[in-house]
Length: 167
Image (tube, rainbow, N blue to C red; front, side, top):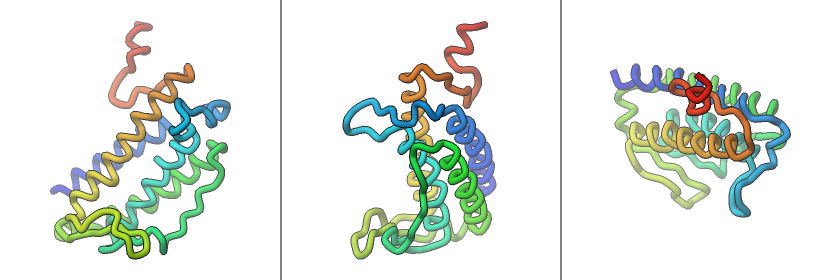
C-alpha cells in the first residue's frame, strides 16, 4: 500500500515540478540572491538531477556517487534542463516501479568513494527524505527566486497569492 501512495505522490509532484521548471525564463537563469547561493539555472538543474538519484537510491544497496557519471549540460539553457528533467523522470519512474514493500525496509547507503555521506538507513526513509522532500525543499527555493525576479509562480496546490488578488 505504501508503494501505491508513493507512486501516486510521485506522479502528482512530477507535474508540479514540470510546471515550476517551465516557468523559468532564460533571461533569469544567472540570477542568484546572494554570493553563496546557486544561480537559478544551477538550482533548476539540481532539481532535475535529484530525479536521477532515484535509480541509485531505489535499486542499489550502496550508491557510490564517485562511480556514477551524470552528464548535466549547461545550467544557462533551460531547454537542456527540461530535457534532463524529463529523461531523469523516466529513469526515476522505472526505479520506483521496480521497488517492493520489502525493499523499502532494506538498509541503503550513499557514499563518495570510501566516504559514507548518508546511511545506512532504511530505503523507505531515503525515498521520503533524500528524494521526495529534497525536491520539495528546492522547489520552495525556486519559487522565491521566481518571485524575486518578478516572474509568475504557477499554482502547485491551488491558486497562488497573486492569482487570488486578481479575483
